[in-house]
Amino acid sequence: MKDKIVRKDEIEVETLDWGTLGWISTPSRTGTANITSIEVTVLPGKGHDFHKHPDQEEFILIKNGRLEVWLEKESAILNPGDSILVDPGVVHASFNTGDEPVEVFVVLSPCVGQSGYELVEMADQEPWKSLR
View (cartoon, helix red, strand yellow):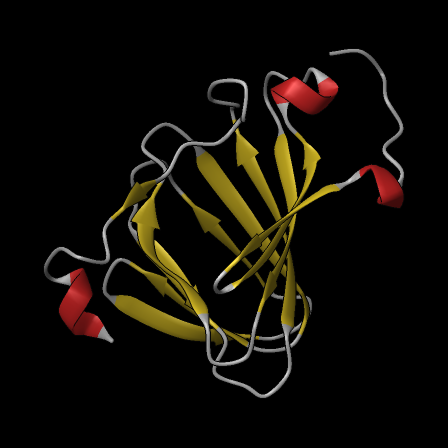
């Protein structure tokens, strides 16, 4: 990786039905090999349904709002300043049950492919589809 300053206006924002992903650092954008970083906003009543990252660790820090998080079959409510660490291959999910957007900062490591990110959807499989 080459040293790089990333300005706010350089962050590539992807809009999804449940919120936004602000891609700060990926192999294709910054040349990173071990760190993919994302600013994520989860809209009220929406969530990033059950999924896993087979070969990546994930760190999630709550910046604003309250987020319902799941690790496998256990859930908890996280507040600003709280964080969660997810091992590779662990099924997890995040849901905004409040009235305001929730902002989180996410780091995945190591990078996988040029996007730096791998994801396997699990929400359509049991027991995940019956948990919530």
